[in-house]
Length: 405
Ligand SMILES: Cc1ncc(COP(=O)(O)O)c(C=O)c1O
Picture: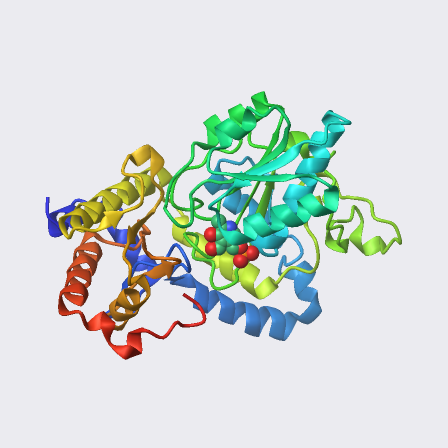
């Protein structure tokens, strides 16, 4: 089938109208910053003018601001297979990772006192995950093992925590959350999943898979907006023993008692830290409306077909595709290797096709099944072919590295 036929048969095609997409742009970078969902602008206007402007500090009670982190956490929970009361929104993924990793080491320690196990993490992962694992390792006196093969690392027999990303940010490789969690548990380890490149792009089953802890961002496939709050998932069975290191007053059992000593709140509320960024939080709330009535299995099915379509075009053009081809090992972006990735992407963006690059030589194209069409991909491949054939990416203006790539 060609792109037009695939689009005509696409049951998710109407979801595109839920987003504001600029004319003349093909947006294949929703795995970095999701496109703007329609309801967000009006909702934010209301939050700013009516809630903040009129209600002032009463908004914390009257407009439900105080309860928003747990309420919105539960909305994210429905997308990651988490029953209510296990997910809370707030802060950045980096902050949540620090909290989760530290708590995971402490949790494992409380089960097996005296076993100074190592933290195992992905050698090729997004840098913040590695930086924070190193920092937690230094703070708690634990060795950090970086490996491409978590199953082999678990066979060491001394793993306290396995911290892994569901989808690799560079290659798009998808890991088996359930299988790897089971292997980690069999080895006596606690798992911390980073769901950044998976949440909103596929069904996830954290409760079913017996996951211990997970974190994720909301500005990619959830389209929460630039810098929108991250989230942490803590399985209910761990919540009341979990010693999170960031003991901010919002996570206190009685935050407004203003007591001098910290007493963690029961349940997921202890995952709160400081005052939540309410404008971003409520923008995320509005953005999540884009998922109302959407079946994540359909999102996944379309995302895989988009990937297949793009890989077939990239193969035809002679690209080296570094994303796994097997559907069960592929997330929702496809990465191509090209020695001039940076200027090629700059030329593509000038021509209206937005993807991104990751060092040293990776062109990354993300597919959001809610708003990307097969027609988008066909056009992107056409422009890519044209940029390469013309050689115009070699022009000086495309050689300048922007601050954010
Ligand atoms: C896997 C992964 N983890 C974490 C982050 C970012 O963390 P933060 O939200 O703290 O910037 C990203 C950003 O792209 C990511 O891809």
